[in-house]
Length: 89
Image (cartoon, one colour):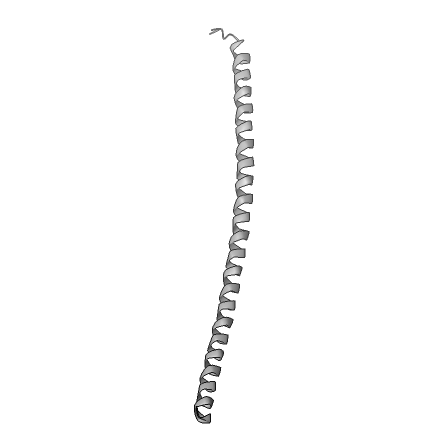
């Protein structure tokens, strides 16, 4: 193999290594971007979970309030039923 051939071959190898290096940097950037998106997605999922828990607690409170109102209405109905209306006209 001649020196010129070896020089050409070394140049080709150097170019290939440079290309691999550039591709590796791009892959690192892509992985970092995916990690950032995954982190944002995780934060969003945590927010949704917190909101769901708050909604569940509010729904439970509403159900308890509805039961209290129902009991109060039943008590009022029993009290009102004790009164008799007379026709004094």
